[in-house]
Length: 380
Picture (cartoon, rainbow, N blue to C red):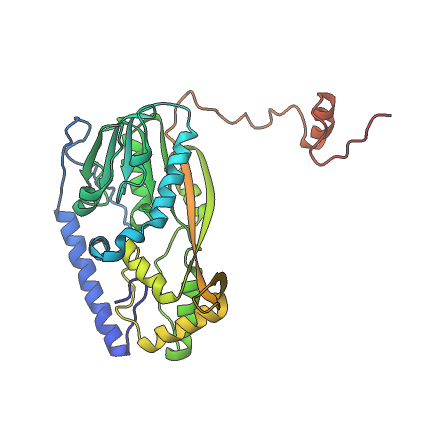
């Protein structure tokens, strides 16, 4: 099994795999409806059970058991220590965004902490208490903690379980974990928004829709050539426009979205897949194919190198320029606030006293130097 990639060799095998996946989905649905888990933390903020989900149907896109297994295997891989560069980089960038908020936070929750890439940077002048939440107990055991702020680990058992009382949190952060949640609208509204204090903040980043587009295109072209059709090998990701609309519909105020792209170069597509497995970021969608034809993988590697590969400027021992292939990781950064009466409100529609057409003359009159697309002539 190749993580983000896998496929089936025959139509019969594909039909059998579909039947197994349908049965697995039905079993998972019965288990999730029958199970209820909860735990209380030592500071008295956690509650015994989460707010029940609404009766509206939720699109079940990801196989949670498969994702837990993939992450657990990734933690055990020997190359795990050198494959955390993406989480480390985005953890630092998330911390840098926290520093832009000029206020002190009593309680910070890091949802999907993995190895503690955010909490280890937080200092005593920023927070009084940190809670690191993750799905895997193995990740919590190895997660780094803040050297200055008391840090507690919380095991989150289930997507709809956020073990914190209502109006108890000042800041919730998340980096590279929300893209595996099936009911993201429900989690944003019924869980995080409920637990935030008025004027509390949700801040984080998630993988965007253009992530790994080179790998996706190469596999599609290779399968189309060798098998006459293609299957989805890369998990679906959200776009920045969809995420912004989602947060506004969930009730967040002052929503701001921006996009970062990180391009990492690898010696070959095989090295990219090895790192994805070690990160635990392999495909966990229910409709993922179960295996990949080796001939297709070989063709995909050749197409990847032909379409996107090139010399990266480094030289080998013989003085030849090395070839490498790029992989684009798009990150959608978001921030939203729980509504509060002290927040800025938009002006009443029709209350403007100056037209945008006159903005240049107004700025010139006030000594601003002109602008708004109008030409300002020097005075004679």
